[in-house]
Amino acid sequence: MTGGFDVVLGLALLATAVGALASRELFRAIVMFIVFGLLMALAWVRLQAPDIALAEAAIGAGLTGVLLLDTLGYLRRRFERPRAQDTTPPAQSQRGRQGQHGEGGNP
Picture 1 (spheres, rainbow, N blue to C red):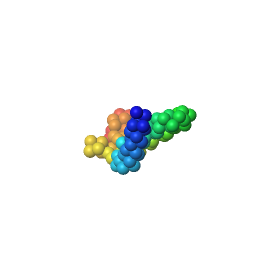
Picture 2: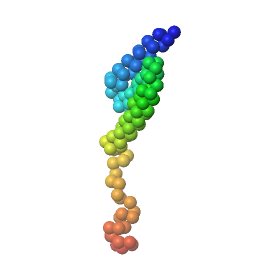
Picture 3: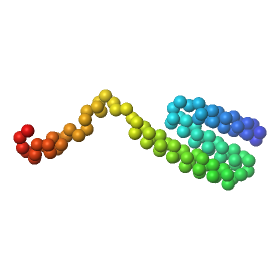
Picture 4: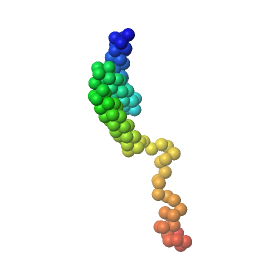
């Protein structure tokens, strides 16, 4: 029974690795990378190396996954295309117009 589980685990590792590398969407690739790290931690447990499994789960899946997701969020905010409704100039409020001509002065 344990041999069957090991085969399924190995196939799952291969599938998630290929999925992470072949994905065209960055978010999906990052999620697949995190899943790969968790499955790899499980593989290390099966190989009776709990210290390496904890390091893989904490660093490989946890910390690296969070950093990759944070970087993806930064890139999306930085290079986001403006929508059609957001194309108006942002600094045209009432206060900005009054500041150009005085507090209540004539235009």
